[in-house]
Image 1 (tube, rainbow, N blue to C red):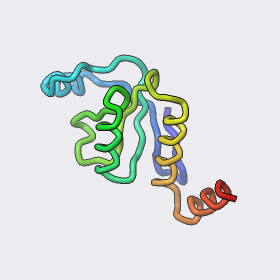
Image 2: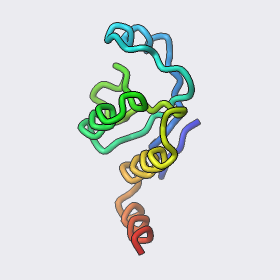
Image 3: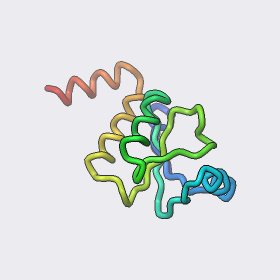
Length: 108
């Protein structure tokens, strides 16, 4: 399942594929189990900051190297953090006018 804004993908469910598992093991990382959500982020720095701040929740795989998206373990993410992740992903992909209108309504 995936969610889009104006045909731009911003969050999606993503199971790990066999080709994802070997590179994780090579990095000394255990493959997460459970449901995984992919989310767009503003830039690579934002992705790295999320992973560093909560490595038990956020991670990446080589398939996403150089790509501004992060993976999240759904069973470990706090509902408020999930909401923030989805809203931020939407803001990154939404047209500027739509995003500005949303932010103005949220503040008002």
